[in-house]
Image (cartoon, rainbow, N blue to C red; front, side):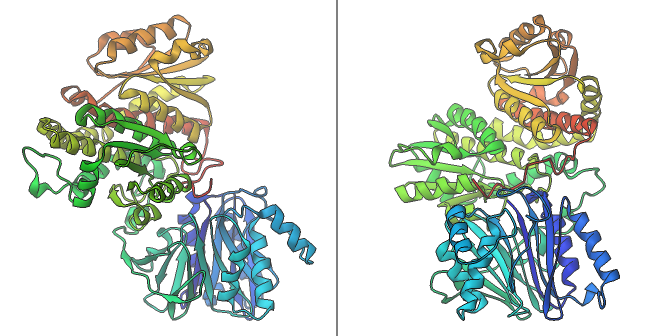
Length: 625
């Protein structure tokens, strides 16, 4: 979950490293650091806290050091950390030095304790609490035996257990970067058109230099220098070839574009994300009766149509999307769907039918537990499908087939527009399968075209101001319950998660019918209950749940149809859904409820004074277990 950048070439390396780390800060921001070459020595600057600290230290270094002009530096590595082994201190920050070897690392060395004992017994003295530093000692030992830096990195992996990526340099081979990947921790490489190479955990740091990137596969070693990049097999050391992928992002899409936070920008980008995902998934030239949902990718369509049942695998927000997918697919397609947490499924002994299709959802395509399930299921001989927002991600390469959402890069740690895009992809799956079974779903398709426009009008209009006003009124309460039924239940879970993630307040999500089975004991006048109650099949039951918590003293915030006077009168606070939403099928309610709970969480977080885009203890891409 950490962020790595490395550069070797002709440009100002320190500027590239710091700018790249800022774009990767969503992967971790407990501490950060850079290493760069001055003369024949590698200098290291690192600090706990945000990358701004390192940027200031680098500026001071340039001012106070003889010959300290950092514009002359053309070679270095950088890292932003999400702590696993060891506290987020300067001592534990990367890069780590072991003799003439300096490295950055992403992932976990699982045999850390055993390896540390062996290295200490051989005379090494680790200076940090991290597992990462140990890898440097292994490379150092191999190079002392005569290995090159590349082979030293390769051979070091023989002693290491666990999934990780590293980028390493040495004072004995100045100008050479060696990156390696084994397991789920991603790595991306690119050739600098002006001469050189850049490596990073994600593609964002590469955008300023090139859009032609190479996704490093598991078991790859990549060597970068002023001439470009070269790939080798991790086990044998034999040269290999890797294809390039062209990114469809721009520098502009990575900026805040006038919004106060990336999260707010990405909430407002949801209508565009829906339209782009819709256009990317469907072959509209073939649309019509009997199939208003024809997939552009025939392999995807064939896998879905041949499945006896579907297992949706995900973590976190993606799991909430999967829960909604179950409602839609079972309703329209009549296909049995189970929804599983990847972190639990992978350690069970799952029973799958021969034609069971496992669909894995991961916004980044790099979620460690989800990828582990895909590999497990592939090994069992079942087909797998990925739903991800990142082309070239590990999930897209390892699943049998893949559906790409087109939400664009999402920088805010709390998922917003990628969640909506996932929902749409699952609804389209349901529509396609239902059409193949003779369900008349042309009206659903027609309504789909209206949803982004209705949502865009409200986001640009009064929805944000309503959320702001309500947040000010309820910010002082001790905790929050989100309740909903049917399609609103997964949004209740997601609303509670968003509030926990960015505002750090107690929040729980429940199916409304479960309140009496224990949670209602928590209700008192210091508790806010957020009731998701659009006009749907469950509305009357949800209103009864509202009365139950209100009778026990809870402060009630209801979110529902603007014409629902009974709901409005029964609540203390009220947020109306878009006016036109009432004309649509109830299946579309989550697409309107979701931005409301996102905005509510955002506004509460602002009032709490938290860092909305970089919440504590979290990272965007969970690449470790």
